Picture 1: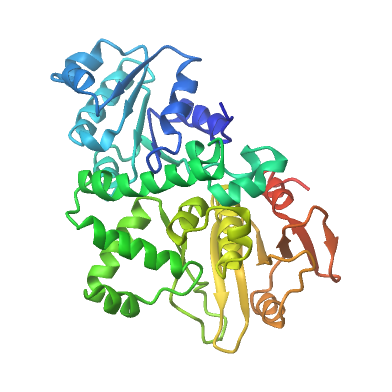
Picture 2: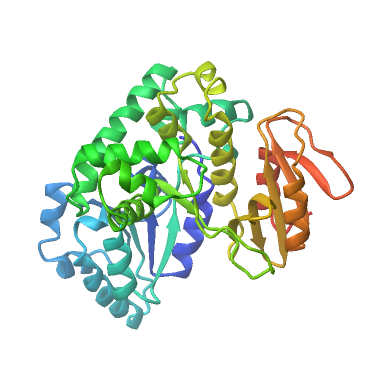
Length: 388
């Protein structure tokens, strides 16, 4: 089993709150992580996609009252949203008895799940997001494989690139034909596939709903609803532009990235390293891979944006950290050189640190203010925040 960096954080949250929701796409490793945690404590695991486990919850209050001394893990919680109100009652009752009342809720991130839990368990629940594997969770020499295949464990650990690609294609098909309809939206699978593929071809670009709507033959509101769905399922990232008034004409449209590079490559038909390095999307794929890895390890309370003005100032990634603001330029070159627009943007935002992430192995200064840094080292800095 690959050790996930979220495991100690999850364990800590369960000590702080009576309920923790662990959200993420299917097949990302939520159940494996929860069961690894359960091995260290007295626990009860229920899979709400199992008819046998659902039958146990015919009278949920009675059943759960018999397991007050255990960590109760409820997998695929979005399948039974009426449990949230019952869990609120159980948590409050156990609190009055002086018992911790620990519940770990696993589910595909959906509007229904977030809405139900935020209403019913307000003040009692903490949310954590488990994404695909990151650079800090794999061996140092496997970063290239991770970029090509993506971070879904079954894809990353496949015995070769062809098997990995088949897994990802099957994953995409299953998500479109089975998983998304189970979450509520009744949208033809082929329409969603075309939309997902369009996003892949626009990966790293500014979102233009009108262009996509015209290609799909739908209106702008429908495109917005489709995009919201993929964002809520943690399959697409909508990176917002820097919005504070700096006296400049700012770009206001978000950038769109597929969150897993392996799924991006599957939708673009990229199977091998040679395919990837020769593809026009190589640069934007690397940019998205870096952004996703960096955002996944940001200190609590941090925010990520991009910055672009009509005059040409541009920063790929602006990190608003506690008491600091970093500018990150992303280059797929062993001799990276930031653009003039990057330096103009850094001056506009008065950043604390200027970094240029590149695929090399050494850090070195480009000038007195800017330093190149490998992705793994930048992630280490953020993971050990506020370290040196």
